[in-house]
Image (cartoon, rainbow, N blue to C red; front, top):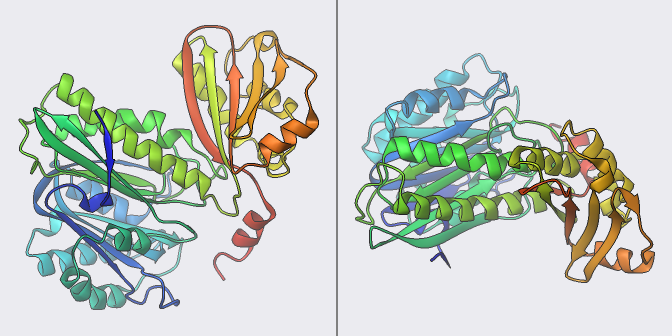
Length: 404
């Protein structure tokens, strides 16, 4: 039985966090350096962007946790540390500095960066900020989350409680993501902590499977970031018997992990750059799960549909258009479409053709800030959900001068 609890990445036993302004960002009111720390070494797992252009921290993190273990996460915002000649050196120096301050190994660090690509990153502000970052460690999940934000407007954090091996366990997470969201593994930066005892092998298996139905199913703007990373640290302090194979406890852990990642997915999509609405596309009746995923992702990626949702225009033809070019094998003569929000549900298409509906009622439904796009393919039992947002004038404003 899952139960939502407070605390974010500090909800699980043995984890503390902090976030400070160290000087990477010019705005002194914004935190730009974050830390998550476990009292004991953890099993660790991560997934990374498949963009060929990758931030240096990803390479360092991948090398650090190749043995399946880590004890801390450090992340800066304001600079992606990508496409820099000395990027690896800076990331490794960051690990060395935080490791010395914490008294742990430099190879037990997950290091991440987010911000402008191709801008040199100076180690000085990071070095100067680390002492206060460590001394201020506590139940500050929100501070850590603020420290990893760039164009985000909202803190994204959650924690849930579940049972494994008759022990109460917790999983918590924080995320940043607002623009460059169209992942091919996970999205932007997500850090998850748990006090559940689980082997590195099973932790990686759980995470790799989860992202296929969570982070890989969101899109804000169709751009796959260079710095995407999702990492999970599991310190085992809940005291359950180690999860080393599939079974009831593994299933319970996966359910808890998915509750956390799904919540963060919705938060990222809703906070898309310039967005005013969260779009949730639910596909059912597909011939298989992959077909459903392809259709759902295609629909939330449609710029034309996203613009229509911004204008509260029930232009269902754009939904069918996106289904048609998705590449999925679909009988378009069986497709049904409806829009739903807290104002009600309206059917706009049946068997691939339009039906009469009230434009006034449709407008009322689509003016809400959370819209469900319901698609029935009438061809099997496959289903999937994807998340996106509307496309507004502000998206162009934000990205027109993002660097300058």
